[in-house]
Image (cartoon, rainbow, N blue to C red; front, side):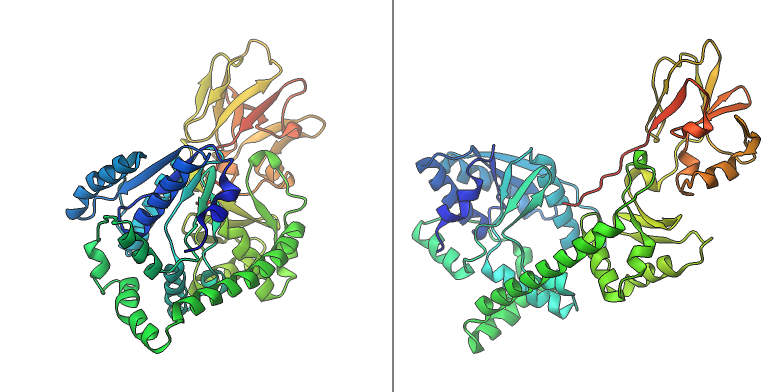
Length: 432
């Protein structure tokens, strides 16, 4: 087996090590190796983490099994129950729940080790080839990637399943077998149980060769990512309204690229925010890009949506996809900041004196007295300020009685000597 010490060297200064411990063969071998290393070398504190999905009755016994293994190795165990959302793919939903739990667990700089191995790499490549995946889907699982505030590390990717089995037998390890792994109705189980044994009979080096191909594809993807970063550096520039805290891209810069480079740049950019759409759903990008100037197209994706406004495309997720509570709020003590339901918080810079104020949202027909310009329709003023349409229903307005005094974060639409400030709701801009 590959030298574990070499794999661990980059992570020796981490504040904590965790092992994703299902109780199966792969994670049992990994935990045994890590525990042995930790007992003989200076290393971060090591804990095992068992995520209990609750999908099978037999799985109720696995936390106890994992606890007995950890007790024998002198390793602390955390058992985390999760709820698996119903959906078309139970496998994907369980994976999402598991990795969400891992991401929440990891503090800054912490490392989670997982037991994926060389055969998993090969099976993933073949599985995705059969689904028609692009280069991003076909590239190898990386040995390390960000997760939550820490990192996910796969130290066994150069190790075959056969080597893991041999190690477990030599060290008399005990592990559990998930009965669902024998159900060939699941596509990956069919590949593992039916297809790969036939391939390896005819081509004994099939798993290793496929894993190596996945690494080559990963190198090619790295070059495409470099190209995407260069293209996005131009498209990200001159972003308006920085106080919104929203990511956006210059549509004109993107549209000037070839269609393939457009998709490449967007795949890289969106991949940090959501699960990428398959080829059938990329028509949503073309509709967004090519819509009329006065249209309000929306491209809805798994974890958010793209909207177009004033020559840019904007990524909206989390609270930005909903609507705030549109009820007006009295503000008797305007020296104290106010939290708006579902819409961040507001405060005043400077003091307007002893007047009664309230916060409300656009209903239509509002008029603002602008110094030097007289009474102006608010809709026209917001157009002049290039405020995106999706922001306008959320933009707090300051009233004295029925008189509109100020618009949040727009000094030109406020009062001399004091301004209404707004901290918009935050969106989660990254994916585990």
